[in-house]
Image 1: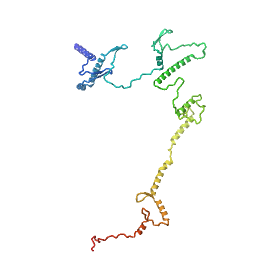
Image 2: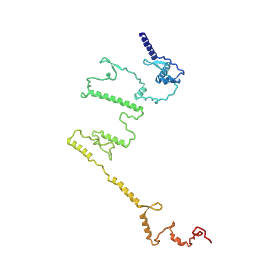
Image 3: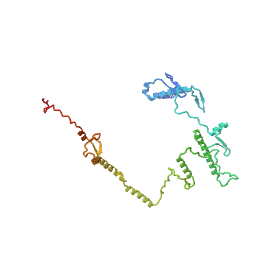
Image 4: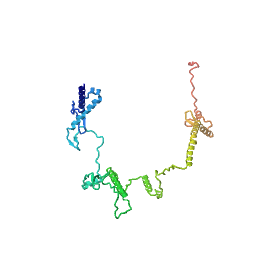
Length: 371
């Protein structure tokens, strides 16, 4: 029993070791096409549908492992070199597939002012050692940075003969250091602006913007006045000068601690405003719809329609008729007029011919009369 158990363990260990260290040789029915410049391999072999349906994850994992192994085998066929104790393969320059870039090719950074000056003068950059021997402490110290040799931690500073002894030279040293840091930062920002083709100010100050608007000029004048010791309170104003729109008064906050009586009055005022709050009534807006309704009803009662359906004012028509009846030259009974303006009664008198008689061919019963 013990021997069989040991043999099973050994067999299982050997199988695990064989799975872990698979053979680097992979057999494919159709050879893969490689694009080593892009580290790309194209596999056109048909898939095993039965194995894919049986265990999808295991089949895809084995397929990816075999294809990666084939890419690694092709990479080791290339020329190799050693870089920093590591063996590196040199990728070929030619490629099989033209793949688009996700981002554009980065542009070369323009040289700084010092780099252009060094190139003109032929100055070559020499690499300095990071550590420097310090004779005072008899030890190696970094050139710059934390605990560097450039850090001046003197507990006493020697005052020159012609200098003022009352000046604090420790503060003076720290101020000079801060000025150097600010100068380096200004030069760095100026190099960035020059690389982006921006208009850069010189050492004399800040350049003004070109073609400034009227509001910008007003704002600049206000800032210049506020830069005085009195914050522009006693600055002279120009004729017809107006304050800019955004220059309002600062908010004045009430003190945190004050008299209890004032605090009580303020809280009572707030409560009274809330309790006695009434809605605002606009009489003109409230009456406006009622007046409109009445006016519309009056306009409807005064309008009349004739036979043709046209609207007319009855009162206006009667006034016109009275004016017409007052004339003596025209007849009082104005019955009807034709389009030319002649009376129909006069037309009947002028026509001497009588109307034609109706023929009585039929009798009372509707039969023809006998001759």
